[in-house]
Length: 99
Image 1 (cartoon, one colour):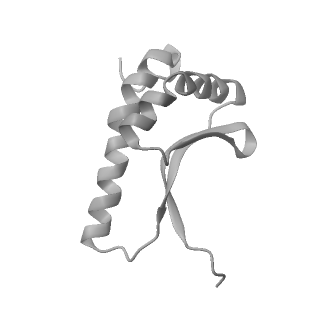
Image 2: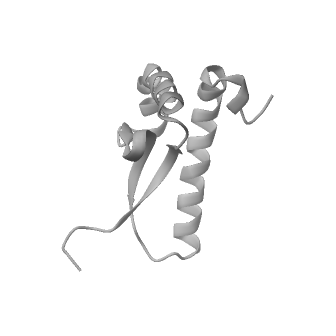
């Protein structure tokens, strides 16, 4: 094993068409200051593999015990709570997850 630390990524991966992913990235970039204020400066918004978009943060990998599981779950839930209202305003009607 190399000396780099192992990590997981917590966040949102947008793996639709490149056009829709770009629209989502632009929408999220509009809110990026607010997102970083709510989630922390470690959050990264970027184009990713295959024309995808992601907004995420690396988290050090640890043994998956109850405490670590709770930490990861809480952090992921925070992403949903912060990003969902922003995305609801910007997503086309055919890809929204609530009406």
